[in-house]
Length: 551
Image (cartoon, rainbow, N blue to C red; front, side, top):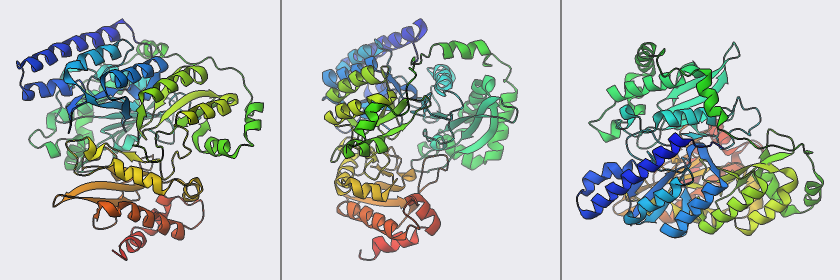
């Protein structure tokens, strides 16, 4: 966990009071809605379909039990008793009253949580691998660098009014759990030929109306030069990014139109003129941030404790263990994923009671720490393997032990037309129906790893472009239709899915997904060939034929 210092706390508290005054002026009529819009957006407040939506940052996906309890308090006191975890390690509250927002922010500030720059044309929440610091084979904890970037970009005067929103993601593992290739800047920690740690820098990733996979702009940037190089990218974007057309304002469009080679030259020229500036990080700067991260005092434990041997006789426990428990870098410990995808439930939602209970379990079993992943699930990163049976029973009791992690019912979905004023179609009911269709665990195990992503509009908050099966809601003559793509992925081999054919009506979506899955089971070369690998091998046509043969 990162411990805020006096500067961090002062900044957050001052921001709360500043926003309190802005809200007061809006409620009195001194500010019009147009004047207030930019101010509220930079504090994470949207005007949605039915009410204001409040988006809270969870930097690099790390929460303390105290912070999670405070989020539960906000859900219970100011909302309708639940929160929605998003694909960018944020939590959203959908029914906040404007007059109460400053109080909610003040309550969060007391435990080091803020909503600064979770919206607006600025640098957004810095995201990272939800297993950061505990993943085997990791170069080093990427959250240290995520925190450096967070501090550098927060309220940066030059980058608070960019052409469009701007997103960072950072990973330090060979397997990318942070989806760095679909972000404006993706950073991958690695070692160069001399064994020095630095970053591969990718730019121009992003989904939405015009999706692109990020491209490597520089294979290696030393850690000391990270901030200056990032600033060079942002300066070039700020100078050349389109402000005349909101649909062409993202950096991905600039990179595409200039070409990666020309864009890289522009950035390099800018960087060489400023690399030896105050932005150069010396060892003391890095160690100062590193020193503010606390790590558990792990015990020396056996890999296979007696408690685990006894519990292995319970088939329900074993199903959960094999699905939701992952290898930790320290012997005797495990990473446990908590599924927020119950059968028939809205993906990513957690009630206030669940959040309180998870905080208690984190204190008991995970050194008081919780993680949020971009797949809209939570994780306990420091669980002793001897405690897994007891933890499983407690998680099952509160409804977050569904053994469907990475399986067909572990669906990513945006709030869609049930909440969002931008949406063309519903997302949540589609996800709920699909979880019912694939509720049988044996069937899900037979299918294997398969990610379904659903977006209610072209803005792609559900990351449908990179779903193994992607579902995009569109509107046709006042009715909800859905485009289906297959073969997308968001990991280190990120690809955009391919459209299989014409959009289908709302009532046909679940049937279409079942047809695609049945085609995969018939077409795969062997039982362990993943869905995305079958699509890559055979292409879209066999799936298109199956879906549209009788439609």
